[in-house]
Image 1 (cartoon, one colour):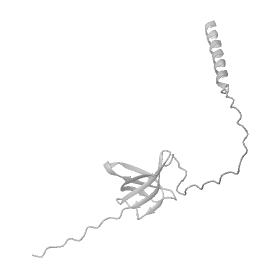
Image 2 (cartoon, helix red, strand yellow):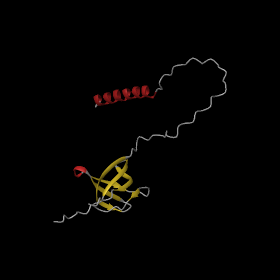
Image 3 (cartoon, helix red, strand yellow):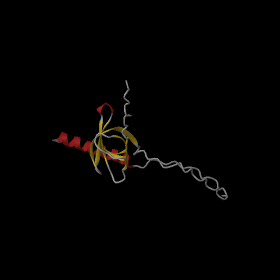
Image 4 (cartoon, one colour):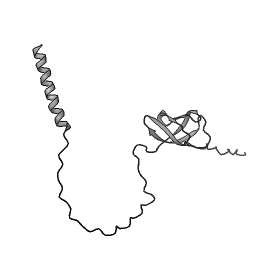
Length: 139
């Protein structure tokens, strides 16, 4: 019992010293004062180019193409792509639809990751190519 009490007191003393060190603010170095300089009129700011936009790392637009495996209007779409890879995308009111989406249709989905979800920003249906009519040879 005495031994356990001594160990507990030693541990509490160590925690007290360590927490005191952690709570200290880092030392700041004094910078020499800059000499006073008379300010002149500020230079006019250059306008930023219109193409320069703030970048967001969290939501890059990505692309997935394949055949529609399942579709619920306004809710979600499942697309089966190359190598039988199937992906599900949530649809929002902002999702742009180009063409009529139906099961089996070839689509290209532009999407962004929102946490664990993949949210479709646009869906483009690839129109089916109709085979040209075959010509019969006259014998």
